[in-house]
Length: 420
Image (tube, rainbow, N blue to C red; front, side, top):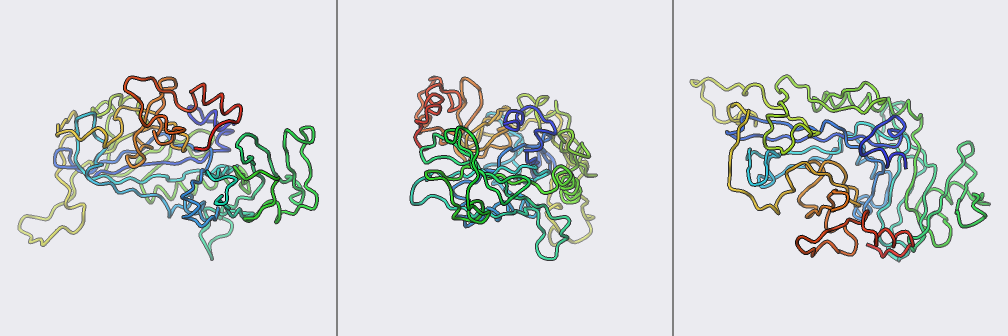
């Protein structure tokens, strides 16, 4: 609860206890008008309080929680998204495109792991024959280097408990182990045993906590699993310091804080790039309020002398156009249809699927169109709204998202919501 309340606008060491911190950046190869490559970095690190697994992840990872964690948290498994020319550079505003260069994105660069790792299971088939059956291991090592690696540097999470939900999605319960005695397993249900937790008799860690066939209360399934980082805050700090050294070498990324007492900000430190002034980014509606920074090439790449025969470029960098002044440069190109890209002013996404943050960073065309709530002003995917009620929304009709619609809230309170 603490993490969910604070992660949008505030940060403290207490909330950081539950958060994964991630960095994102984009690189554009530029065009003759914009002059050379340029890089955009999200200064404020993206914060996720819950690691969400979707139905597609169950198939992708064969139901192995450990495999999903290694894929997402290992520095060698960073998600790289090359984009087509149609997606293009981020330098665009409404009908104007300021750069036609090709863009590449690197997202989900994990900077810090939480001490309490919450893993949410996105299973829409609860209580049915095709319900997911994830394999929950007793420990997870998302940063493991594999066989022969330094065991002292491996991050280890220990399974400590679950949040359970009934098949009707109307009631929660809890299953957990005692912090001082992992052999004692408790189940807490506020509607039973006068609201006191009970000890599961004859229960073992292997039968009631780990594996695919965990013995659970009748009519309940796992909604969320919780793992505790072995070593606590000291291990969290060690992971952070190791990662920022790696990212300086790999991406020339540096971070403003030596530890996690304050929220770090990401910066680019490379001799070939300099940061643009925010007010020079005239393709943005509110550049001074943007949480991103942009860096441009300082000088063009070296070129061979004219008398030297050259069969072709030695590298992609030699094909870069000569550098030109990018201050207040506006290149007007026939507009792409608005449906091909997201809104270009700063906008916040807060969708139930887990996409949260600056829309210019976390929104992708393939995720479908987005709609803005007239109450909270956040944007969310149309396809993620309950019962498809935003799919054929008439023009000028007010829209309330699932978090603001009083009818949806009332139905959730009484446990009458249908499955999505």
